[in-house]
Length: 173
Image (cartoon, rainbow, N blue to C red; front, side, top):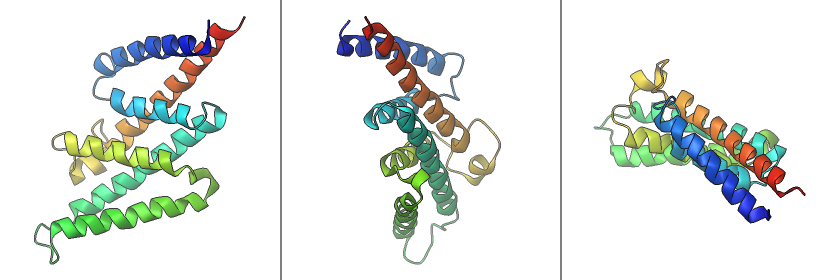
């Protein structure tokens, strides 16, 4: 079987499995959209061992920095002197600079994966009612983005690896 067909079939098959998990037994814990972001990042970064490690490590690093940002945002008073919008923008700007400068550390050098983790965390927080609160952010629960987005990134990255391995088996003669 040619490589594109094998990869298409393996990704299609495993995306069905991932969807079943996301809407079935892992619903509320495993988010298919966060997983497919990591799955795509794995392929974008080369679909190899280094891509697996970088997607997971940097993706979770992005989740952690978004979580810190979210905590900082919950501390900003709506009556803050320059206004909440300006304070929120400054907070995000400073943390994103830190995220990018962290690339000086070799293990955190894959900025795109860090940004994807950061963005996925805020997608979850801004689209899921009642999650952008200190109770959720500091709580030990399946609502905390440190848990659910990190888990989705790890699971999605491994789905990427499994789909690449399955496609490789199907292309061997």
